[in-house]
Amino acid sequence: MEILSQMWSLLGLLTVLQNILPTQLLSLLHSFYESLQDLFSPYSYFEIPEFNGYCGVDVNDLYRHVNLYLNSVNPSATCRRLTLSRSKSSNRISFTVAPNQTVGDTFKKHHLSWTHHIETVQDSLEEKRSFTLKLPKRHRLTLLSPYLHHVTAKAEEFERISRERRLFTNNGHGSYESGWSSIPFRHPSTFETLALELDLKQQLMDDLKAFSEGKEFYHKIGRAWKRGYLLHGPPGSGKSSLIAAMANFLHYDVYDLELSKVTDNSELRALLIQTTNRSIIVIEDIDCSIDLTGDRLMKINRRSSKCTNKKNRNPTGVDNGEDNGRVTLSGLLNFTDGLWSCCGEERIIIFTTNHRDNVDPALVRCGRMDVHVSLGTCGMHAFKALVKNYLGIDSHALFDVVESCIRTGGGLTPAQIGEILLRNRKDADVAVKSVVSAMQAKILGADVEGMEKEYDDVAKEESMEFQDNWEERFGEGKKRKEGCYSWERKVKLFVRLKSLTKSDSGRRGV
Image (cartoon, rainbow, N blue to C red; front, side):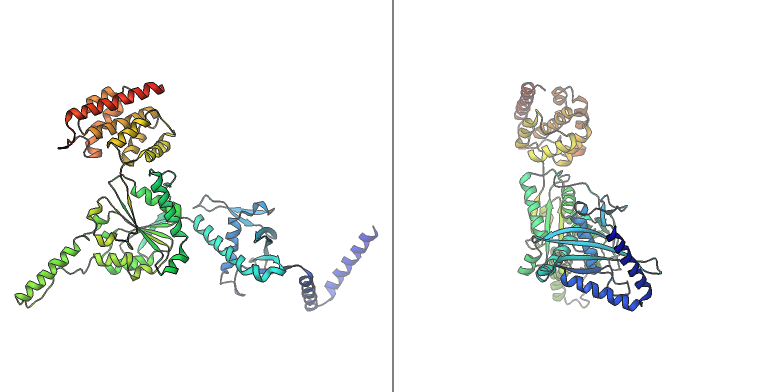
């Protein structure tokens, strides 16, 4: 009791002194006390305010990075109180350290901590926010700079992953301030759900990862930090889905460039300048967008015309084949690999085409399109991925038959298989048997509607519907190919596949 009474007496004395002593003297005594505390404390303290200077206008970027960094490390494990928030455009829950709460951290086997301070400004509704970093005084010179660099790198990575991605398209006004309009990019395609062979999928993921982490390497070798991909294959082979999976894998924005809306090369350069870093620039159907492949022929004809004019002493000398008012092959080459292509970093340029041979060789050479990806019919791994996605099964008794059909030339594109599985998704057996019927029909290349009716009673309705629309969907389903199998060989092959299907079904209890 005596000790408590003495403490109360001391507090009373301090209160009296605080009311009697001048404010300047109290401030001086407080500063002296903090200096003594810092002198004998084993820790150093660094304050990071929300704004630079005293005006409260210039935002301190380091404060924002600290806030993002604490979100990335999930401070809930070491902090007792957190403020949770979520924006309308994202499902991610953001953490904010509550006022005067401390979060612990570890860096190079040293223990550090962050304290979030929020003070109300006197006679104002504004708040003064800051973070205080506490670290060991003995190692502050060796820890401070690397640790802040680590915080900034982690914050930028977290911001890139968590921010809302956008899908841009050019609006036909590329020469103005903004030639792009955008919507949120929420395509669900990922490499996990992509119908692609395992080796190719892994190669693409490794290449994309190496590119995204290759900033120092590209600067070291003196190359612009960009990479080109050419995706070619028949319609429905999954080119657009692969682009979406790449964007989701890297967390990049997507710029879908419509060349038919671009008036000339100057507007094309303006659109390139307006794109951001960490983005994918896509030009789909490069051989159909504009007439680029005919540029070289036009130039040759133009030169011949000039020579003829000179011989005939044409006084006008007018060249009707000028490239004014349109995008040319030269302009597109400069867009992908010229000096203007270096105006940003960490960009991927993707061309897609259904017919690779129709694309000008200058567009697809190494250095412009570094990676050529051939997409076609599904292999067995891609087929299993589609069955897993649509039907939710990992195996089926007819998988061996499907593999035999694929090896024999009955492979279908992911879009074709996906359409069959989607229509029959309520019954896995019917879905897989319908795919087998379609593959067998492709192998025969003839009108096998009557034989497919006999093939399976369960898939009767689906098979008839599929055959009625076969020519419309697949183009060559019922066309006979000259110089291929004779009719007798086709019938024998169908009987062999049919017997294999029935024997496998009976053996596995289907």
